[in-house]
Image 1: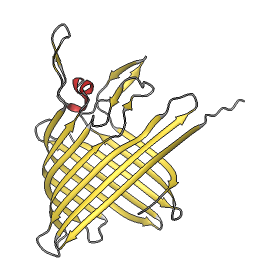
Image 2 (image 1 turned 90 degrees about the horizontal axis):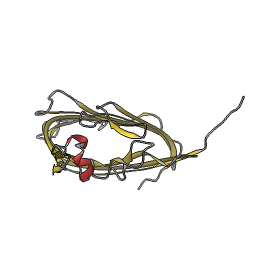
Image 3 (image 1 turned 90 degrees about the vertical axis):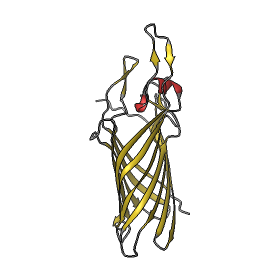
Image 4 (image 1 turned 135 degrees about the vertical axis):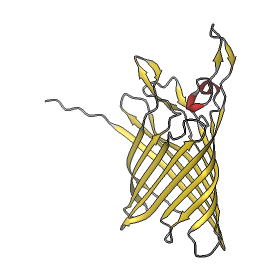
Length: 263
């Protein structure tokens, strides 16, 4: 019997910055989340395992001091730091910084539980803007933007659009609590459907993070991220050729142990 193994090394850097402002019945909550991870195995190029830049900002006002409901306005921006690839093909990028980037801006109502562990937001009127600032990806119609048009001979008539705007319903929820001693759960989910394009076709983004505190500087964590977006077409490498497929559920899981610094 012959046993073989492969050496590998991986790492992830995460940052979370939170600022809250409260005055009387007015609140303003700002949050910046960054993550970036790489994995390297013998005989294989470095591969990205995580990449996120996320900014949330919510302002709310409640009409009386005892209510847990707020009239709210929410801003959300997300993109990535570096190019993404359909590995092992690293010659053609399938995503880039600001390609895509997503901007949500809406108004609605928000519920915050008395212990602050549960936050739910409902917006019947949210503007979603998709940015694809790389012209090559925009010409392909990536991430739902209008693709380029060509004549019968394949000559370019008009470049693809770099933006797409939608009007939608947005529902989000977050539950954050210490479920056991030194074990903290942070799970958040969003449901989105566009009024004008395939209304009732719901996009889902569900993130879950479980942090286990070993001591003041060492933590272990489990992260999962499930995404379904009808505008994101999957791509596969078949016999060296990149082939575009239909949308599908994307699931990412990360288990890690690392150092933590809070300030």
